[in-house]
View (cartoon, rainbow, N blue to C red):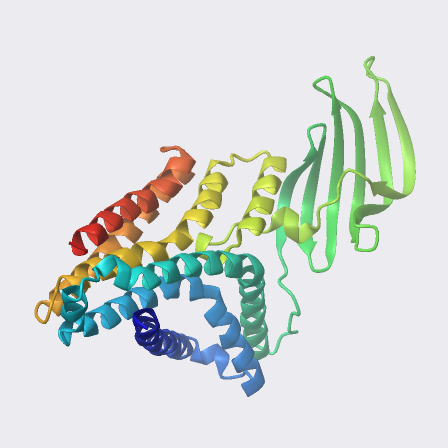
Length: 362
């Protein structure tokens, strides 16, 4: 019965605070982007704000969780219900264990949400932004994000490199393409084409017209003219080859891993992506951290000092977030081991929150 009572109180506050924060963020966004959003239809606006909410929900929920825990536990303390529960021989740990379990379930749920929804929501949100901007300026409206690069290098494997003078994701094609085959630290074959097109059916790049130069050790060169040459080693779509890493809170772990592999193929350092990948696992545990801290500081406030303890709880969360962001930057810059940078703030504050939680139970 006590668990049901606590759940009812918590989720009533959680629903109100989550909806309120979502509406507040949406209003702020609308006011700030009114010049572009004014050309959108009502149905488009509804879809836009659906994706807008989904794109930052994983960052909003810990704040809502902290507020809900503090308000629900604080209401028990303020009305002496918490004191009565303690007097009946039930300690704070047993009373608030449902909230801790909720934090753990939310952590798992947010990770799964990021994997299944976040990446798509972020892409759709960007498409709508580009569409509204194009409509406002009387330009053709894009149906997908168009990524493009100039003077772009890409490694399909350890022995094959590509140079693209210009490459675009929509349409999926490239201009001024040069393919280098490398063997025993020397270039053995060069294939060049004015145009290359990505074929969605076979999921490979095709050079309609190409010139192949095979270079022999004695500097002899054999030239062949090719038609519909298929680069069987180049299986990546243009959008996967070029797409930049977005903010960690807007990326799913699986997409981030894919970007990491593509960065390896481009010959880039990958420590920053390794840090972000680990941070993707540790970040959802922030929901458990805020539950521990919220219960600990609020259960000890009693009838007085609630505002002070509430401020202290928010301060802990902001310190955690500031430390996490500071260390993840160091991890990306190779100043700190990327795994240590991603996990140390979460582990530290989990231990700290658990100790505070245990102290509040006494």
